[in-house]
Image (tube, rainbow, N blue to C red; front, side, top):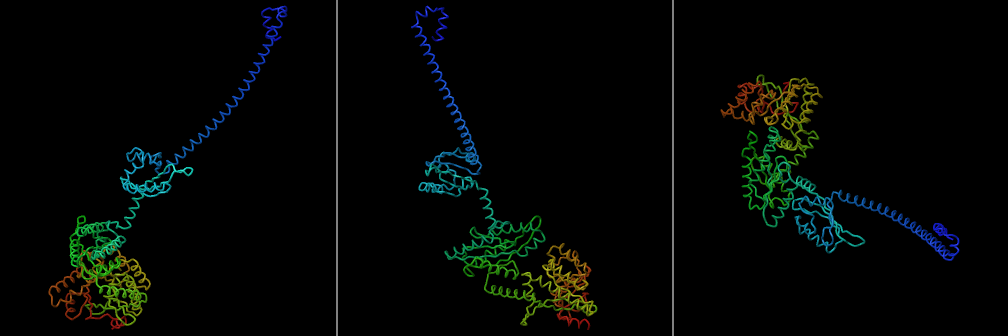
Length: 625
């Protein structure tokens, strides 16, 4: 009998008689308890198994959730990195759907909308409202409708004058296009920088005028236009006369101010379609289009010369500046831009040679003269290299003793075929080309060598004077060569006299004085040549360490017939003596002039009446007498 039933019978005090009487019933109950107990066990087993299965499934779900969470975190991290990358590209990114709707944008895109005061535009067409060239962008959209897979690049300008480079790519997944990505980069600063570089590449930095590169393009364009319209064209080459003196005496700042004022004045006379260009320094080129006749050009040139000649006020000082103009014409003279400029340049130099402050038209005669000068220049270079230039010497006599005390070295050039090239032909060319420095060095070398030869021949009191231009005198290499040559030949500087012209007064007086004092230390003395012919600055006579004053022969030629010339000559002699200078009369050509300079106590004299220039051997014979 089931133990649970026995406990119940015992609890209810049922004896064995009761049990035996109800045996069948009690056995049934016992079986029922046994069956129930078995069912409970089976149920518990089932619940246990189910619980274990649920626990396992729950663990599996938890593991899967953990994995999904890890994947989600990684995905969110990747998305964050992607967004950070997109936001840090330095580009504005917009994504538009195929229907033109704005789908997304990065933070720079938001900043862009904030900057222009727009809410994010929801459709592509709204973006057009801030673009200058809307038609260009509409044509791009039209092209995309025909071929949405295109890769596009370009530049747009906004209404606020900013520039953006753009790239546009289709948004594709599994060969299906879903939209379009637009990338914009602000290139405004770069465009401004490029524009500045381009501007300076074609414009003069000081005046803002077109430079030569831009000028050539404009002349070529003007020539083409003139051909179509059967019109004339004039090219004017304008150069300020003696502008370097203002730069040297007043400084480059003053010179720059004057140049700007020159430009302003010129522009007031020119028409809008004429071109004014600065070529550097004080050179300007003007292109006059649609010219009816040469008379029109002449009138313009006259007006320009008059405008420039008006006084310039810079600071508290006034300056008078003149100019020289050369003119070439299309189609008369040429149909090439460079050739027209070159020919106008030739004509400008002709204006300078005719006295400056004038204009001159190009002619074939000028071309021929230029070719002649080029031939002389080339031959002169060869002559300097071959040292075929030679010196002759014109004696200077002491008017008290009438003995030769010094000579002036004069450079002469005789070509191999015996043709003599006069100094007034080759010296100006040498000065224009810079060959004067080489000639100066050659003269110094030959003169010092001659001094050394005379010293060795016991002619020890004869001095040689040499002429140096302002350009030569301020050339450090030439001055060094002079000192080195004296040292090489062991010469005393007192036997070398340097003759300078009055143009030295227009140079930097402090620089000139420093060079003179430097050479004074070697015993070299200085003579001022042609006094009274040029600037005649008495302050410079006091300031510079001069020793001799030479009277220009122009004042001596007329002393017999002109009382004013005689008075001037006497005044110059008195000035020289009062300043403690020895006075030299040059160009003495007759007895009257000789008597005159002797009567007024000139110290020295030279001229054809006394002695012509001669070779060293003749000087030796004359000196040793």
